[in-house]
Length: 90
Image (cartoon, rainbow, N blue to C red; front, side, top):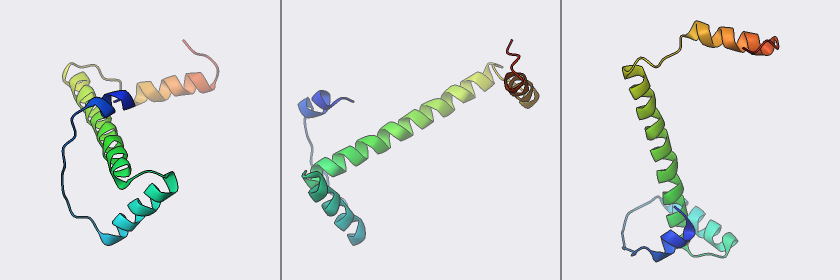
């Protein structure tokens, strides 16, 4: 999600508990970035969601490929890498 989209979205307040050590890390990072803690939390959550959504989408795509028989055997992959390393790419 780009920054302009983030800024135009309606904001909601949430509350949760974290370890004191993590809170101090967030405070130090916010200070080093010259930003507020909300910025650090928002960025961290956004990156976490992006990474996990990407990973889940990849897993689901792989499972779909498997279900439809779009697979390559280990031997085929090894043969392809061997050909590439020997310089004979088909």
